[in-house]
Image (cartoon, rainbow, N blue to C red; front, side, top):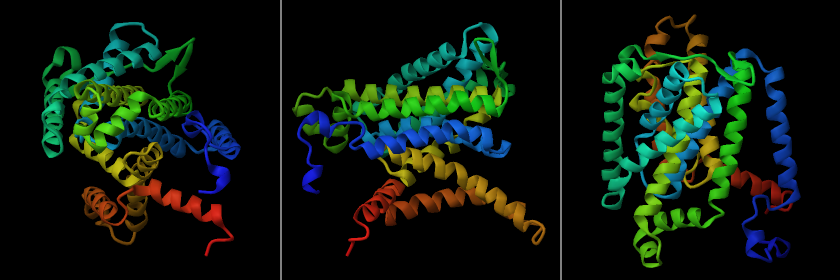
Length: 347
């Protein structure tokens, strides 16, 4: 650390931005996000919307797993609760979409707290199995509670509306999804500048010591589950508005594995890691699709061969990052920043 980098107060050490340069880059990022949909192709707009939804859900899972140390395989189930909530409210009420999204997040948070109750007694693999069982149970509810969820046929919902504006295409959906993603990222970043966020980290690092220091484990573990599930519920609601249809197959178990892979690849315990992981894991399937399209004229059986390859790629990425880069893409980015910070005086 250089002498000029030393912080003179706790508030300065916990500041959201530590330099004017960071503020400028953040402003440029917001400007680029604002201008992007006016120049992007329909396909890129579609991908950007998917990335925004993935970033919200991955950030929620990172709060629970990366920062609190509680492994969860129930993210798809919580997203399903959010998706079905906004679908039901869209069909049976005239609530504006911000209220419907808030209700989706709150209901998911409530269910997340119930599912998080065993976390005081079990952790690690056992907690992962418990959350997996909860996700399976929620999927069973989505299928069997046909009077509410529509069963296997699912529910179709109207486009989101606000102040007479209808979000009926990807261009308009972008201006719903991306601002929410930015706001929820800033909210998550601020959580870890508070006592609550520091309690999460203490529980992750040494839960027994945290309890001795006066941190009530059950309260904060349930709060972490609630926050994570809230993010998942909002992401699931946006998913429903984006596709305008929700079925039990919209939220399979593989989606939970996808988000766990995203935070591992991106870097657990890092807000930036959740963002980078969500972007990377969203673009991997699209890259495989483009590769399949490119080689199909040469090898007609390519679609049959490449279809099951996605699961293999996810598995290889998880194992590879755990072995070679356990801190994920966020650490790679930090090394790049340090290199250019010292350049050209790096030895």
